[in-house]
Length: 421
Image (cartoon, one colour):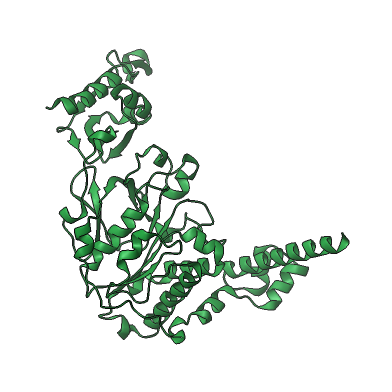
């Protein structure tokens, strides 16, 4: 055992021995009594040193789990660690101690193995490479500036681009981040990279049109490359163009089964990242990569209680969350050689014809409601349940009619107040 890991084992031992644990004493009429030597435990295997953490594994009694789960701060202080994450892995308890940043290991993308059915994005705290597959089909990335979010986004493209015949890309870069400039001549691009908000909306409409095309003819889907739609700074795009939120919602609901996948990234996690009709809590984005974020955004970003992205160390230190399971990762750093090895076309792709930017029909069908429903919501009953009872159909359409009526009333009242002044 190295001195590097012995410190953390000693910290766990000291904290558990000095933490009150109880046991039911049948001789004392069912009373619960304190155990004399703290929480009973047993170390399992040697500690594992990952890129940015040391993981200690142990077994405890199941009745002590709630006590041990709350010991993160005590364990971190005892080991002089910035953060100790305590979690249950089946019948085992694992404690991740964040190493001092001077002891972090670099994770280089070119040194990791790549597979065609998943994107290699870094290394796990425990075990091998961190990969992101396509089940569930859509991914959301969240992280503050310099947390590793954009690095992870470039890992996606570099890892997948080497499988040239299996992938096609649409890349929306509305803030014109230089990190995505090296991909401008990828032969797999379906269109030029969008480096402003207007072109970003245009490319989302292109993705929607491709979804409609594949839905209309199942033969087109067979053998077609997987289309990966990467959208950086999605919150700002949706704020500038609310229509973008409607398109993303449609794609997240229907495109996954057509081999069209969304990878969206945002610096902030809030309920309107995908527009007024979208929420981070939606089941369509159960696969998330969360890097350092303020505490007040933790639940919306992770979709789970009890996670603390504000305590992550930045520099690619993140949490990979898939269907409620959380894995600590560190995003890999691309090197110049990774970009040099990318396939390249002689020129950048051309913008698609206007005919390929269809999609208005699908949007209109989903987001328009009959005028009589809005009239009913304005002058009769404004409850979505009453509107649905009167006209039938889906509750979502009744809610939309209610929202339109409320918006009209707000605009009308503001206009009337302006005239009175």
